[in-house]
Length: 283
Ligand code: GLU
Image (tube, helix red, strand yellow):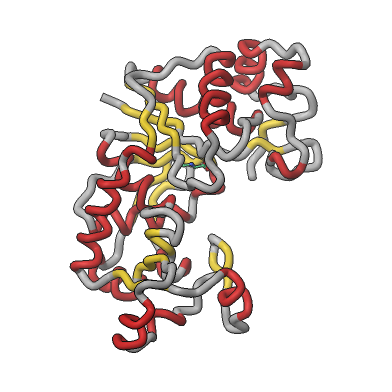
């Protein structure tokens, strides 16, 4: 049984790019007689808002999408993430990180990987007593990527458009698996949940392509099954840039208020037609 999902973070209203992604994941499941799940990725307590959850549900219904089973909320699954962290910690693969964003930005040597600045490893080198003395301070947990890669060995994953991909998680450095303000990070929660929910096919935007290297590594370390991946091209605005709220893409709510018909928008997105200035193109 094919299982796909749409997994938005309720940190704002959805725009046409989200709609295209949800429709792609939905139609993939339906075309295979499978299940389509809705998961709200609300572990970010500072940016997630209940009103955005209600907005997402309303927007998907307006587009004519239906999901199977109850909506799953990551904020209700923190215990699962904690267990996974304990397991990785027991393997000696995690270390606490006390750095602030400013500390990291100030590090002259911070190289860049596909996910942005790569953490320079400052806290990995902290001696045990210095670490112990600071454990009451706010800290995140990072993965010691070199150690993790050494345990996992070479790993591959498959993308329906790109084909076989040799994962290179080391290029993204010691990413955060538990944040200072949340007991998990996106990478950890998404990996655990896709496995726990029996997702067979992850259909999502090409902006998350590189993140899959990390998800695949976590699957290997935690003995989780690896789904198939389908990273679809992003919807671009008239300026050729990916749609984003900060660059002025109208929300679905605004389109609806402006008289746009949800079913017609869904059809336009499915058929790749131009729609009020948007076109589907390869990112
Ligand atoms: N929650 C993520 C986002 O809104 C997407 C997660 C995923 O599809 O893996 O960008």
